[in-house]
Image 1 (cartoon, rainbow, N blue to C red):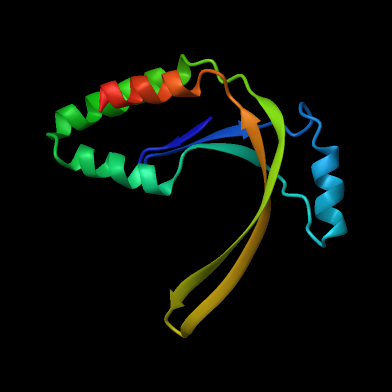
Image 2: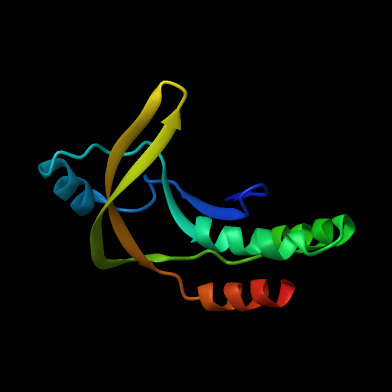
Length: 131
């Protein structure tokens, strides 16, 4: 589990040896993709993380620290069981990086394996109560 306090994002790190991703791996390799070294499930992405940061900025420093503590406690005490679903998606996104020597465009593609996480709604309910 990785909660980035600066970005307010949350990734559930997955040991790829504990889940059978062989079908996904075969499909990806047939289409010229390589296997990532690390797998994760995005629980709180950049957009929602930005919303959380906006809420935190309205609070005093002490209250911000308290909210972060509560979020970390929720994360650490939550049941993160999941099972893969049959659905998969191919996504593509272009990123623009501005550097002193010019602008670089980079297209990234990936396959997304959907999962069933029975208790995720309860996690978001508790997170909303904290915020």
